[in-house]
Image 1 (cartoon, rainbow, N blue to C red):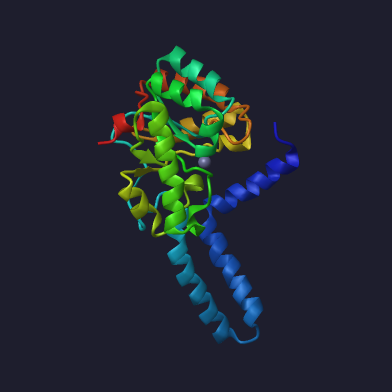
Image 2: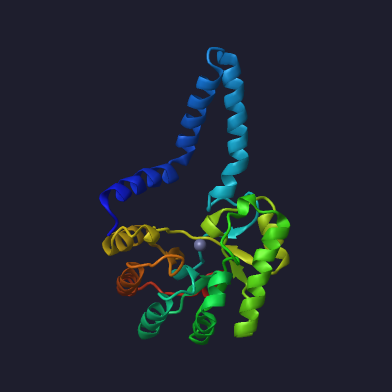
Length: 263
Ligand SMILES: [Zn+2]
């Protein structure tokens, strides 16, 4: 369990994530006011400029916005469990669980991790899960050039092709961040963007119960759930996944791969 201070910081960060429009409006207003004080006219012009800039940047960080290219945020049917940032030492236990439960999932893999655990990539594919591209080094693509973006994606397409004989058709931008040129580059490589519907923030280690309840509170036909099996030790995701599978089955939700549920 994370210590109380970090939990508090997470709470403030979560609030900012969930209300970032207000945080941005208020933050820039205060900044413009204090920078240009005492001339209110200048302060208002500067604030309007900030609002314009915000309108341009907002679709880059909002996973549900499609201004800069189409992105799948939910499915036509089923519920998709997706695991980002692997493969890692946490992946084998997760694969064991999925096999035991007869569930197929989708794994968005990072190229650097693929280099460390090539056998796991083969195992994920052999056990019938879908593999997606999550870039080579997990950068913030908002600040990457089209060339760097292409390189990040192309390298992973090649790695996965060599290990499994198949190229991914889906990708997911790290942190969900994109720029106006990100998706056009991915489209040229035959990659469709898939984001998520529910983000229970398992990466914050909020407790197994919290991960499960955040997911179950928002679950519905067609949701895509974002979970993680890499980058850092994920102590709670495995048990949360076990409970989620159990509860989703009880409620008669069909667990699918992304390519099985999009319509
Ligand atoms: Zn990631």
